[in-house]
Image (cartoon, rainbow, N blue to C red; front, top):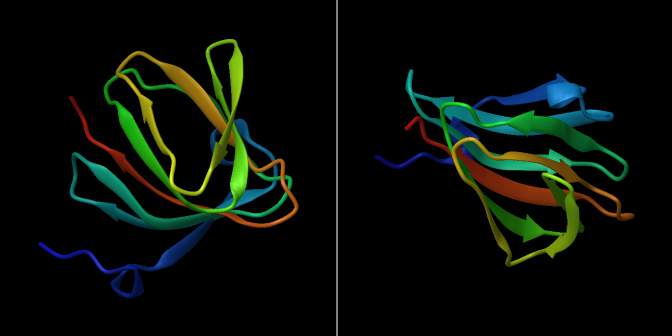
Length: 110
């Protein structure tokens, strides 16, 4: 199956997971697994801290810079990085830069 960003409606999600501002994302969901085909956090936007109770998450940073908060640690991220949050792990993604943070993510149920 090929999932093309242009074939998926982009949604604007305000204060996603309790974060700041909004997340814009094309989301594919097959009833079990979720794929964000191309997501954008504008400067100052974030995805709030949340725990993956039933899933893990893999995030590929495509453009820009930001920070990931994992448990109690904050780490800088940039284009080319692959982030992994295991099942049971908690994280947040923050665009603390002055340009857009573009990424794709896969959230498979486990």
